[in-house]
Image (cartoon, rainbow, N blue to C red; front, side):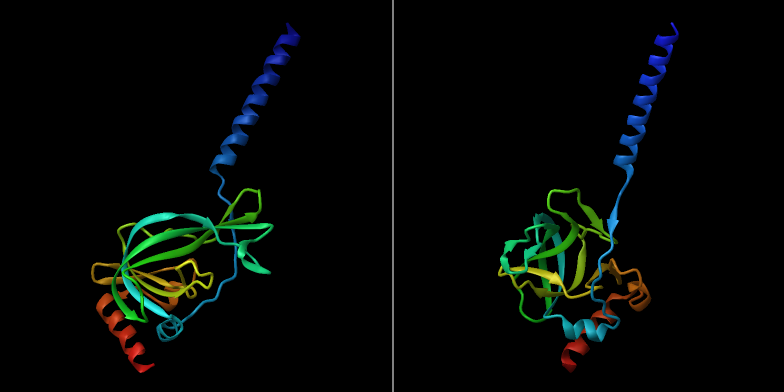
Amino acid sequence: MKKKWATSIAVVALLAAALVGYRLATWEVATVHADYPTITTLEELTRQATVIVVGTVEEVAGTRNTARDPLDPQKPHPSLEIVSVDYQVRVEQVLKGAAPAQLLVTQAKSAAPKGESHVLFEGFKDLAVGQRYLLFLRQTTDGSERWIGIAEPWRFALLNDRIIVESRWEHATSYFPAANANEFLTQVRSYISAN
């Protein structure tokens, strides 16, 4: 009887430990910190971008590995994976540069050594489908016809008459507080005209 009792307790303890381990594994979200360039003025954002557009995200167009082999950028990196998300953006207005009516905008989401579990980049936030944005972009150099943000911050949500920075950089709102959208766009246009 004592042996059955001890066995039952051991089985319950193992099941409880497995359940707790499973719960922790499913609830835990790991992030990785990455260094990235930042820009602190609207004038510099405007100067650095090769294309500035107002557009609406129509859909998430998929994900892909954007880690490239440093010796041959046409090939994937041999030991690293960076999962990036592609968004289809319908361009409403081109403020600077030349852009097609539809842009494929890409942003890195997670990374890991090849074959291991991915962790999110700290501060990652998807572009929202149906949301209008002001985007500061440059075309990728891999010939894929995709566009990426020039630095942090590179995107601003247009919400009614307000413009709000969205960035993984925690200090972005200090440099770019919410503002009147028309005044912000007028300022962007004046910087474009000045250059």
